[in-house]
Length: 324
Ligand code: ADP
Image (tube, rainbow, N blue to C red):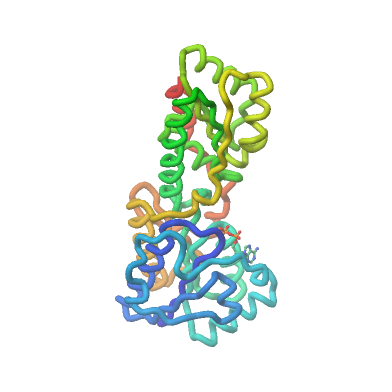
């Protein structure tokens, strides 16, 4: 393999820069010419592909976002777009591609590889932690740290005023961020897309807390919860349970930003290093991921079977026990 390109696509996640740096430097270490594609698949279509050297990735390890930018590219979903992207790869003589992104990015990469035989390795970069084949995806740990930092601040004001806060965190299909941040912040309750919780159950829990002299309460709501978002839940609770002054905070996009945690910097470095080594070893259509404390390859096809992803049952049970 002589020429490898790297791109970031879909939603950005802290730690992507650490992965880019590791990809570029590992390739150069092995005498491979390295290229960066700007704005995800969009850059393949517009031929926005730049050579990268070891210094082009200096001083980025600690930065959130992605220096290669990212985009949602509809054209890449069409046969014509895929063909143009392939022509540009050929023109630049690129024989290996590392894609950093989430399930959409992997779906596009799989199709691209199947149609044109391009060698691709995926790095799971998404704060949602919703890919099979990696216990942690890049950005997930940082997102949880950001959430608990925000909740710690909210708890101060909740406590001072005997308030009930409903805090909405990211996770349309997966309650991963909600579950872990509820444990790490000591929330009174957490509402997950994966678990049915009726408004009555929630009210009973809050009433019990009030009866046992909890001065404030924090309820974390994953945005994909079936009964609605934090505003809807807060409204329904308030109709029958009016013990506290009720407030809602939607954390939103601040969860995507910020300097990556040490965990995400190290994970990004390991995954980038492993992705290039996998290409050198002749692998394709594989995702590099962390299983236990080892970096393992999982086929992209299997990585996309996210419906089989499950939240840890012991953590789910523990949230009930530790919040009494
Ligand atoms: P994420 O990778 O974070 O899940 P998206 O779902 O937006 O983000 O996917 C990123 C990009 O991957 C899309 O903008 C598109 O260019 C490409 N993509 C997604 N699905 C497909 C598909 N079925 N065929 C080709 N490309 C796709």
